[in-house]
Image (cartoon, rainbow, N blue to C red):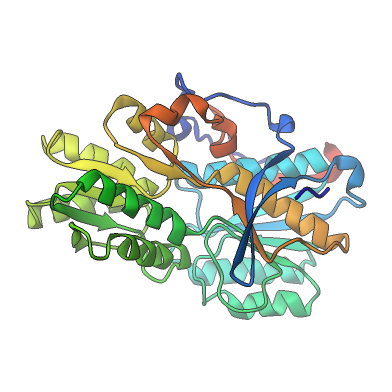
Length: 359
């Protein structure tokens, strides 16, 4: 199916474009494979982005992220900001500072509603906690796109995301295959409790390993800050010396590689993530981390912008939910993947605002 600057440097986190990832200019990305979900029914499709000529007004979009502490959300910003610029529209980005700051995000969203933004792209801190403000936005005629993290409740206009249930399920099945009948003791670090994406990942991973020789012997949850995850992992390794795999959200996978090296456990404890950021990609390339699926974060940003623009222009979307088709990244896959579809480019500076009149 087809249908038609305040900045902070993330150079250290995005890292150099290594041999294997193929770069592509932002404006060259105009369509990509997606999975459409309507009422639980899934369909493979191709999503073709609007051209600038098809955008009827310089719509102003409010973008709300839980934080900008890592390269995952830098990639999300890259996708959103690139598509905003390409279509000649405008945006303002607000970040709440972390998953413990729901009240901050709610205040930011309330301000966006009061300022009468045309649309909202919401990377929610809490799948349930944002619902009152989503309902308020809907009552004000402002479409809200649930972006990446998941929102419960009926009031969002559409979902632009890859299911973390499916990402973690894919990772769990990968571990079952790697185990090949042998005992695998997992330290599991899925992120903060109460965040919809994290809770989904827990369910997906547990469902994938049910009845297998893969067992979670220690699960620890917390904010996705690198130091927080490193502390959780170090404590788990001390408490459970029989752990032989560390599995977690991207930042946890990055921290796990450091923890394994520091504890001199290389070759004894393996690492995988259930999503990917540049440091994890580079660890896979270096042979430090086994694998991780990509959810094509920057493409999700483009998709979210396209969804909200189509709704603002009165179009009916082909599905309530859509997201890029995820792919498991192993050392053998690196040369086939497009860097800019997954991550922000080397040296990317996060964009907090785009003015349609100055493009």
